[in-house]
Image (tube, rainbow, N blue to C red; front, side, top):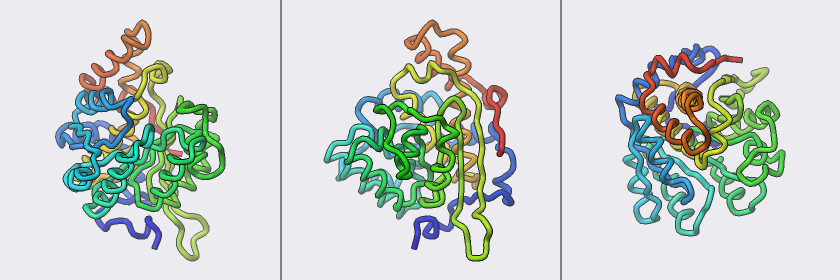
Amino acid sequence: MSPAADRPADRPTDSPDSPAGRPVDLARLVTVMRETGPLVHCLTNSVVRQITADVLLAAGAAPAMVDHPDEASDFAAIASGVLINVGNPTAEQVEGMHAAIASARAAGTPWVLDPVAVGGLVLRTGLATDWLEAGPAAIRANASETIALAGTGAGGRGVDSTEDVLAAESAARDLSARSGAVVAVTGPRDLVVTQRPGHLGEAAPPTRTTWVESGHPLLQKVIGTGCALGALTAAYLGAARSAGIADHDAVVAAHAHAGAAGTVAARTAAGPGSFAVAWLDALYTLTPEEIAGLVTVSEA
Protein backbone atom coordinates (compact mmCIF):
# COMPACT_ATOMS: atom_id res chain seq x y z
CA MET A 1 0.00 0.00 0.00
CA SER A 2 1.39 3.43 -0.90
CA PRO A 3 1.99 6.10 1.74
CA ALA A 4 -0.78 8.19 0.19
CA ALA A 5 -3.22 5.32 0.52
CA ASP A 6 -1.97 4.66 4.07
CA ARG A 7 -2.66 8.24 5.15
CA PRO A 8 -4.20 8.47 8.65
CA ALA A 9 -7.96 8.87 8.56
CA ASP A 10 -7.86 12.22 10.38
CA ARG A 11 -5.35 13.77 7.99
CA PRO A 12 -7.04 16.69 6.16
CA THR A 13 -7.02 16.23 2.40
CA ASP A 14 -7.00 18.70 -0.47
CA SER A 15 -8.54 18.68 -3.90
CA PRO A 16 -9.72 21.42 -6.25
CA ASP A 17 -13.33 20.52 -5.43
CA SER A 18 -12.99 20.47 -1.65
CA PRO A 19 -13.32 23.41 0.77
CA ALA A 20 -9.52 23.27 1.06
CA GLY A 21 -9.34 24.35 -2.58
CA ARG A 22 -10.75 27.77 -1.76
CA PRO A 23 -8.45 30.77 -1.21
CA VAL A 24 -6.30 30.38 1.87
CA ASP A 25 -7.46 32.35 4.91
CA LEU A 26 -4.01 33.45 6.02
CA ALA A 27 -5.15 35.64 8.90
CA ARG A 28 -7.14 32.78 10.42
CA LEU A 29 -4.22 30.37 10.09
CA VAL A 30 -1.76 32.75 11.74
CA THR A 31 -4.25 33.27 14.57
CA VAL A 32 -4.77 29.53 15.01
CA MET A 33 -1.03 28.88 15.06
CA ARG A 34 -0.35 31.56 17.66
CA GLU A 35 -3.27 30.53 19.84
CA THR A 36 -2.26 26.86 19.64
CA GLY A 37 1.46 27.44 20.30
CA PRO A 38 2.43 24.13 18.66
CA LEU A 39 5.35 22.15 20.06
CA VAL A 40 7.77 21.41 17.23
CA HIS A 41 10.25 18.55 17.49
CA CYS A 42 13.26 19.60 15.42
CA LEU A 43 15.77 17.00 14.27
CA THR A 44 17.87 19.44 12.35
CA ASN A 45 21.45 20.21 11.48
CA SER A 46 23.87 21.71 13.97
CA VAL A 47 24.47 24.85 11.89
CA VAL A 48 20.91 26.15 12.21
CA ARG A 49 19.60 25.06 15.60
CA GLN A 50 19.63 28.49 17.22
CA ILE A 51 17.97 30.40 14.38
CA THR A 52 15.41 27.60 14.04
CA ALA A 53 14.51 27.87 17.72
CA ASP A 54 14.47 31.67 17.55
CA VAL A 55 12.13 31.67 14.54
CA LEU A 56 9.68 29.27 16.15
CA LEU A 57 9.58 31.29 19.36
CA ALA A 58 9.17 34.59 17.51
CA ALA A 59 6.38 33.25 15.31
CA GLY A 60 4.42 31.83 18.24
CA ALA A 61 5.45 28.17 18.44
CA ALA A 62 7.60 26.19 20.90
CA PRO A 63 10.84 24.51 19.77
CA ALA A 64 12.47 21.34 21.06
CA MET A 65 15.76 19.95 19.80
CA VAL A 66 15.59 16.28 20.72
CA ASP A 67 17.53 13.94 18.43
CA HIS A 68 19.04 11.27 20.69
CA PRO A 69 17.77 7.85 19.50
CA ASP A 70 16.60 6.92 23.01
CA GLU A 71 14.45 10.06 23.29
CA ALA A 72 13.41 10.96 19.74
CA SER A 73 10.66 8.35 19.51
CA ASP A 74 8.99 9.38 22.76
CA PHE A 75 9.15 13.08 21.95
CA ALA A 76 7.78 12.74 18.42
CA ALA A 77 4.69 11.08 19.86
CA ILE A 78 3.83 14.11 22.01
CA ALA A 79 4.90 16.90 19.64
CA SER A 80 2.48 18.87 17.46
CA GLY A 81 4.81 18.56 14.47
CA VAL A 82 8.19 17.10 13.60
CA LEU A 83 10.97 18.43 11.36
CA ILE A 84 13.46 16.07 9.70
CA ASN A 85 16.31 18.14 8.25
CA VAL A 86 19.17 16.15 6.65
CA GLY A 87 21.58 19.07 6.42
CA ASN A 88 24.45 17.73 8.55
CA PRO A 89 23.62 14.18 9.60
CA THR A 90 25.54 12.21 12.21
CA ALA A 91 25.11 8.46 12.65
CA GLU A 92 23.37 8.96 16.00
CA GLN A 93 21.08 11.66 14.65
CA VAL A 94 20.06 9.51 11.68
CA GLU A 95 19.09 6.77 14.09
CA GLY A 96 17.02 9.32 16.00
CA MET A 97 15.37 10.48 12.78
CA HIS A 98 14.32 6.95 11.91
CA ALA A 99 12.81 6.57 15.38
CA ALA A 100 11.04 9.93 15.27
CA ILE A 101 9.50 9.28 11.86
CA ALA A 102 8.18 5.88 12.92
CA SER A 103 6.74 7.36 16.11
CA ALA A 104 5.19 10.35 14.29
CA ARG A 105 3.49 8.02 11.81
CA ALA A 106 2.09 5.86 14.59
CA ALA A 107 0.80 8.90 16.50
CA GLY A 108 -0.58 10.68 13.42
CA THR A 109 1.81 13.59 13.99
CA PRO A 110 2.59 15.59 10.83
CA TRP A 111 6.27 15.61 9.92
CA VAL A 112 8.20 17.72 7.42
CA LEU A 113 11.10 16.51 5.27
CA ASP A 114 13.73 19.13 4.45
CA PRO A 115 16.13 17.46 1.97
CA VAL A 116 19.01 19.91 2.33
CA ALA A 117 21.59 19.63 -0.48
CA VAL A 118 20.34 16.28 -1.76
CA GLY A 119 21.64 15.11 -5.12
CA GLY A 120 25.35 15.62 -4.65
CA LEU A 121 25.84 13.58 -1.46
CA VAL A 122 24.98 9.90 -1.37
CA LEU A 123 24.03 9.43 2.29
CA ARG A 124 21.50 12.22 2.63
CA THR A 125 20.09 11.59 -0.84
CA GLY A 126 19.45 7.96 0.02
CA LEU A 127 17.89 8.83 3.37
CA ALA A 128 15.57 11.47 1.93
CA THR A 129 14.55 9.22 -0.96
CA ASP A 130 13.75 6.32 1.37
CA TRP A 131 11.74 8.58 3.66
CA LEU A 132 9.43 9.56 0.81
CA GLU A 133 7.78 6.21 1.49
CA ALA A 134 7.22 7.07 5.17
CA GLY A 135 4.38 9.53 4.65
CA PRO A 136 5.72 13.05 5.23
CA ALA A 137 2.98 15.65 5.54
CA ALA A 138 5.13 18.16 3.67
CA ILE A 139 8.41 18.44 1.80
CA ARG A 140 10.12 21.85 1.85
CA ALA A 141 13.02 22.36 -0.53
CA ASN A 142 14.56 24.69 -3.07
CA ALA A 143 14.19 23.99 -6.78
CA SER A 144 17.42 22.01 -7.22
CA GLU A 145 16.69 19.86 -4.16
CA THR A 146 13.18 19.17 -5.42
CA ILE A 147 14.42 18.08 -8.83
CA ALA A 148 17.16 15.92 -7.33
CA LEU A 149 14.80 14.24 -4.86
CA ALA A 150 12.46 13.44 -7.72
CA GLY A 151 15.39 11.75 -9.49
CA THR A 152 15.48 14.10 -12.47
CA GLY A 153 18.55 16.20 -11.58
CA ALA A 154 21.88 16.17 -9.77
CA GLY A 155 21.18 18.85 -7.16
CA GLY A 156 22.41 22.39 -6.77
CA ARG A 157 25.58 24.10 -5.60
CA GLY A 158 25.70 22.80 -2.06
CA VAL A 159 22.65 24.26 -0.31
CA ASP A 160 22.09 26.82 -3.09
CA SER A 161 19.68 26.19 -5.93
CA THR A 162 20.87 26.43 -9.53
CA GLU A 163 17.37 25.95 -10.94
CA ASP A 164 14.33 28.21 -11.22
CA VAL A 165 11.23 27.36 -9.21
CA LEU A 166 9.15 27.00 -12.37
CA ALA A 167 11.58 24.35 -13.64
CA ALA A 168 10.81 22.28 -10.53
CA GLU A 169 7.03 22.32 -10.90
CA SER A 170 6.79 18.95 -12.64
CA ALA A 171 9.16 17.36 -10.13
CA ALA A 172 7.12 18.82 -7.26
CA ARG A 173 3.96 17.25 -8.64
CA ASP A 174 5.70 13.89 -9.01
CA LEU A 175 6.99 14.03 -5.43
CA SER A 176 3.56 14.96 -4.09
CA ALA A 177 1.84 12.13 -5.95
CA ARG A 178 4.49 9.64 -4.86
CA SER A 179 4.66 10.58 -1.18
CA GLY A 180 1.21 11.98 -0.47
CA ALA A 181 2.90 15.14 0.85
CA VAL A 182 2.32 18.79 0.16
CA VAL A 183 5.47 19.92 -1.67
CA ALA A 184 6.75 23.48 -1.25
CA VAL A 185 9.49 24.85 -3.51
CA THR A 186 11.05 28.06 -2.24
CA GLY A 187 12.44 30.85 -4.40
CA PRO A 188 11.61 34.40 -5.48
CA ARG A 189 8.06 33.02 -5.72
CA ASP A 190 7.21 30.03 -3.56
CA LEU A 191 5.33 27.14 -5.15
CA VAL A 192 3.07 24.87 -3.07
CA VAL A 193 1.72 21.75 -4.78
CA THR A 194 -0.60 18.99 -3.67
CA GLN A 195 -1.19 16.21 -6.16
CA ARG A 196 -3.04 13.16 -5.00
CA PRO A 197 -2.54 9.85 -6.82
CA GLY A 198 -5.22 9.25 -9.45
CA HIS A 199 -7.82 6.54 -9.33
CA LEU A 200 -8.93 4.08 -11.98
CA GLY A 201 -10.85 5.85 -14.71
CA GLU A 202 -9.64 9.35 -13.85
CA ALA A 203 -8.11 11.37 -16.67
CA ALA A 204 -5.74 13.10 -14.25
CA PRO A 205 -5.15 13.10 -10.50
CA PRO A 206 -6.64 15.98 -8.46
CA THR A 207 -4.14 18.79 -8.22
CA ARG A 208 -3.84 22.00 -6.27
CA THR A 209 -1.17 24.59 -7.03
CA THR A 210 -0.58 27.79 -5.08
CA TRP A 211 1.98 30.53 -5.66
CA VAL A 212 3.12 32.78 -2.80
CA GLU A 213 4.83 36.08 -3.61
CA SER A 214 6.63 37.70 -0.67
CA GLY A 215 10.00 37.97 0.99
CA HIS A 216 13.26 39.64 -0.03
CA PRO A 217 16.62 38.49 -1.50
CA LEU A 218 18.33 39.19 1.85
CA LEU A 219 16.68 36.03 3.18
CA GLN A 220 19.29 34.16 1.13
CA LYS A 221 22.12 36.01 2.90
CA VAL A 222 21.24 34.82 6.41
CA ILE A 223 22.16 31.28 7.40
CA GLY A 224 19.29 28.96 8.25
CA THR A 225 16.30 30.92 6.99
CA GLY A 226 15.20 28.05 4.75
CA CYS A 227 15.83 25.43 7.41
CA ALA A 228 13.87 27.50 9.94
CA LEU A 229 11.03 27.71 7.41
CA GLY A 230 10.88 23.92 7.48
CA ALA A 231 10.34 24.05 11.24
CA LEU A 232 7.75 26.82 10.86
CA THR A 233 5.96 24.62 8.33
CA ALA A 234 5.80 21.84 10.92
CA ALA A 235 4.36 24.33 13.42
CA TYR A 236 1.63 25.43 11.06
CA LEU A 237 0.80 21.84 10.13
CA GLY A 238 0.41 20.86 13.77
CA ALA A 239 -1.81 23.84 14.51
CA ALA A 240 -3.88 23.40 11.35
CA ARG A 241 -4.47 19.71 12.05
CA SER A 242 -5.84 20.58 15.50
CA ALA A 243 -8.35 22.93 13.84
CA GLY A 244 -9.28 20.63 10.95
CA ILE A 245 -7.59 22.88 8.37
CA ALA A 246 -6.03 21.32 5.26
CA ASP A 247 -2.28 20.66 5.16
CA HIS A 248 -1.94 22.59 1.91
CA ASP A 249 -3.30 25.76 3.53
CA ALA A 250 -0.96 25.32 6.49
CA VAL A 251 2.10 25.08 4.24
CA VAL A 252 1.04 28.19 2.33
CA ALA A 253 0.55 30.10 5.59
CA ALA A 254 4.00 29.18 6.89
CA HIS A 255 5.63 30.51 3.73
CA ALA A 256 3.47 33.64 3.85
CA HIS A 257 4.43 34.36 7.46
CA ALA A 258 8.16 33.98 6.78
CA GLY A 259 7.95 35.96 3.55
CA ALA A 260 5.91 38.81 4.98
CA ALA A 261 8.42 39.20 7.79
CA GLY A 262 11.21 39.29 5.20
CA THR A 263 9.45 42.05 3.29
CA VAL A 264 9.13 44.18 6.43
CA ALA A 265 12.67 43.46 7.65
CA ALA A 266 14.19 44.63 4.38
CA ARG A 267 12.65 48.08 4.80
CA THR A 268 15.02 48.98 7.62
CA ALA A 269 17.95 46.57 7.24
CA ALA A 270 21.36 47.86 6.22
CA GLY A 271 22.64 44.36 5.42
CA PRO A 272 22.35 40.69 6.42
CA GLY A 273 23.14 41.24 10.11
CA SER A 274 20.48 43.84 10.79
CA PHE A 275 18.09 41.99 8.47
CA ALA A 276 18.31 38.84 10.59
CA VAL A 277 17.33 40.75 13.72
CA ALA A 278 14.58 42.67 11.94
CA TRP A 279 13.22 39.43 10.45
CA LEU A 280 12.85 37.83 13.88
CA ASP A 281 11.18 40.98 15.19
CA ALA A 282 8.74 41.03 12.27
CA LEU A 283 7.88 37.35 12.73
CA TYR A 284 6.86 38.31 16.26
CA THR A 285 5.19 41.70 15.77
CA LEU A 286 3.24 41.35 12.51
CA THR A 287 -0.48 40.88 13.05
CA PRO A 288 -2.37 38.16 11.18
CA GLU A 289 -4.03 40.80 9.04
CA GLU A 290 -0.72 42.47 8.24
CA ILE A 291 0.80 39.17 7.17
CA ALA A 292 -2.16 38.51 4.87
CA GLY A 293 -1.84 41.99 3.39
CA LEU A 294 1.89 41.74 2.70
CA VAL A 295 1.78 38.67 0.45
CA THR A 296 0.16 37.78 -2.85
CA VAL A 297 -1.35 34.29 -2.96
CA SER A 298 -2.68 32.93 -6.22
CA GLU A 299 -4.23 29.57 -7.05
CA ALA A 300 -3.12 28.29 -10.46
